[in-house]
Image (tube, rainbow, N blue to C red):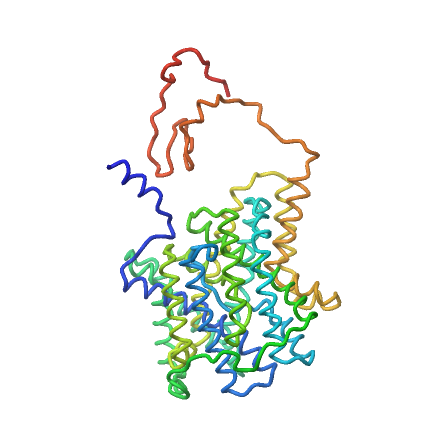
Length: 493
């Protein structure tokens, strides 16, 4: 009986950890604060491009919160064939904004945009398993590059927040804004160093709350608009009319879907690396199908393509809270925010510099996780070349946003994303330098007998001549196999 209990305990995945209700909600709220600015950005941009008034843009924002919450719950809790069951926050993807604006300006309006998103999402559900089969092309040298570039690509976001964000106006980049970001960062570091586990794990949430209080004291926070508008509102299906399906628009959005696949796969691999979870092609396929199902339903409720949010991977890394149920709670909060715009306006009133200060640690931890993964790759010149070229290629869209301005539109759609650029280059170079080796498989000159491997399990490792299991407990090594004493020589290294 005790052995059965032991096996059951060992089978529990890190992401299946359950915390007390209060902590689950608190940590979930941290996830909402981390991605709130990112999730409302696409509907604000699209609403502005479509010339919508404040009320109509409010519908877009509420819809994206509502669907993002439901998508997060699906991805974290999962149902058969849908959901990776990993601590991943879902929300409206920014990668398709340029393409959707092009569709919008093509004369079809929002109905054509919603039609293209709906159709491409439905097609995406079908092809997700085929994309997931490519997982073998993501060894540590590739995943390390991808995770690192995810973190690096978020640095401009936190810098923009620290300088004041889009709503800063003339104060953008002022020392006052940057000082507020620095104060928030110092609070976060102090809480993390406090030695109190609860304070350390809630350091992001507490630093944002305390940073906001400092902002109120300095007159840099404005909550006057919180009670302006509806208190409760349910997103109305097809509020902007029935979707219109245009072949050209659908093809354009399919390119966006491939980009979304790449980014979501990278986020799943990143969060698996952070949590120590096991991810195979089936789990990747389940995650991508959840992405696409959410993207198919999203336009029915007036919003756009859904994908995983990289910044929340950083939150998992920095807090050490691996539970998918915490992120599911964050999804529930998003649903509530979508139904209660007044609560959304409270969160939206948090000054951008406060988020910028917290983002320094948050996004930096993602890059650090990528560097740790790269350390697992074989240390040779070929892998060094792959890493150097891929990281540089991924940084191009960040340092020169107009680099692809003269290229065909589809090239810009794919490579304007730093994550997609780095991932594509890393995968291609890994195939060229590590996979296509003339059919020759490198094999060590050392040999071991099959019976010597029979007792090994995942996570076992040899340190200083001693064998340890995944928990760090030393495994007893017996020199002779029962029933075969002396009949098999030990191979020499």
